[in-house]
Length: 167
Image (cartoon, rainbow, N blue to C red; front, side, top):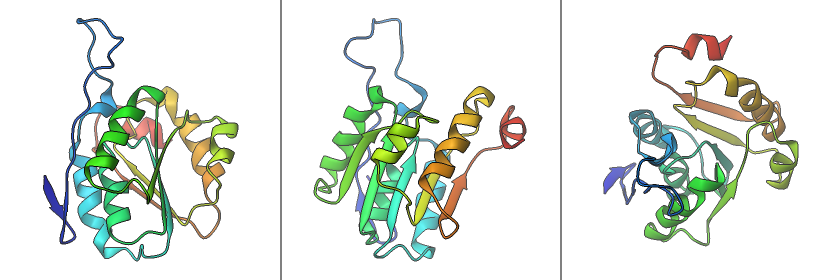
């Protein structure tokens, strides 16, 4: 449990997928990372009431769930298919089933992006700049989900590969 913007949120880390063997671990997005906490704590300073919000690479969904609690009119949490059950668990734990959609999204897949109903007013991203080979697909998805009026918020930790992702 954590308090963000005067509201309580319950966030569970995800378990390894049930079909994985004992030697494999849960995907990177299965844990709550510091960048998500920082972004969630920043969101109360952003006018989100009545806004449509999409979170890319949502992982545990903390920033998107925070946006929903802060009055966003539509929130869509996206990530790889194997993380969808964990995201749904966090949506249910916070009693946001009617206000938050959980959808699979592979970065760069135009069909996945258009199915979400863009453009969004706000795009949220936390700690997504760690894999240079994924950056072009991420950029394609950002372009497909936004327009000139979209507010794009990114929190990240500076580490090896971050600068290369920006370039």
